[in-house]
Image (cartoon, rainbow, N blue to C red; front, side, top):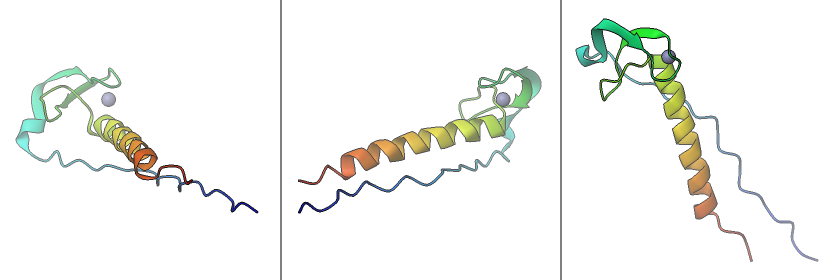
Length: 79
Ligand SMILES: [Zn+2]
């Protein structure tokens, strides 16, 4: 009798908390957030306009995608 195949565990929900206390994350001029389009004074690491919560949400999505991709390559199908 074949043993039941085990599925890899679902990756946990990812959360990312960015530290944007440095002055380089602030601009005196408002510009549309690159994610949601609303105006913001904040700038990401590359000085692009972005809300902190929008950047954190995008980073969390990126982390989750990498975890899922890594899980697929790290856990090959059992023989
Ligand atoms: Zn935004």
